[in-house]
Image 1 (cartoon, one colour):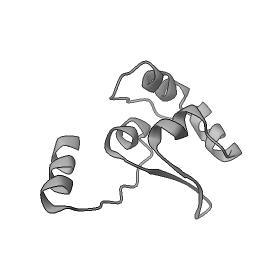
Image 2 (image 1 turned 30 degrees about the horizontal axis):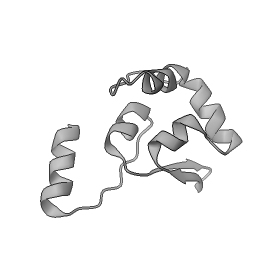
Image 3 (image 1 turned 120 degrees about the horizontal axis):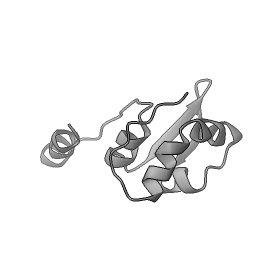
Length: 85
């Protein structure tokens, strides 16, 4: 799936907006991640910055709920199937 998306973006010079709760997918496919809360952007940063140094309390709360995903990213795995509990 990510290869198809990357190819479309590259071949047709596209910009895509993806909405997901799958943090592994977001980190694999995104140049920039926007974290929303109550319809407003809480943070807008590259994925590596969001996972390593979240700025807002809400972002930290969400990421702590998917701690396994954050640990997998730090460990260098690119595909994560963890879901918030």
